[in-house]
Image 1 (cartoon, rainbow, N blue to C red):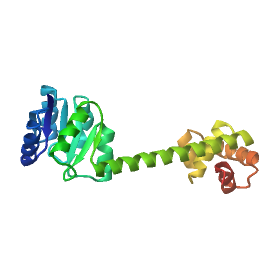
Image 2 (cartoon, rainbow, N blue to C red):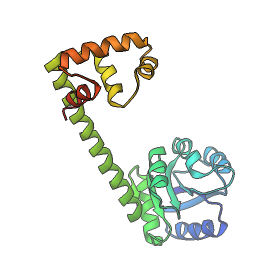
Image 3 (cartoon, rainbow, N blue to C red):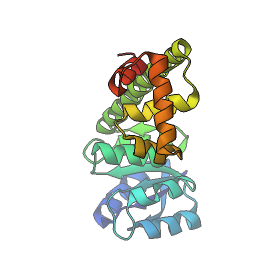
Length: 218
């Protein structure tokens, strides 16, 4: 039997989940909690295989305890909140699954608990869309970063900039003034100016704008 802990501040929700799970023949509710602090204590004491964890609760919400809870049990978020930020942060915090009220029936609840207990993941359709979008965005960011890195390497090979000159130029590209760059890199403002003079000479640039454009390959 899969040992389940129910964590939700709504007793009616807990009663419904207990009814569905205990009737399944594969899961047994071994405990309940109505807030995050009580949930952690129950998880340490009962060692459930799976914890159904709500997001909005008093004392400590689901997001504030999900990482610690995930070290004690497999977490299946079960909440009415399907906002992008909450889904991402709960999954990033260690939840193996995410169910949204209204997106599942009793049979799917049991399947989700069974899947999460086995170490796999289960997402409601709305949560799956958020996860897919986050993955796509992360992949696009990684690809853009890789292209930028390659442009930098090519520019370095072409112009022979030192690592420090590259660091200075990267900060110039962010629009920072020399005095700010000096503070960031632990240099004097005069040293930053000297690095920039060397950069201009190597890039054949007349000013900061031309240097940045050549450095970024635009």
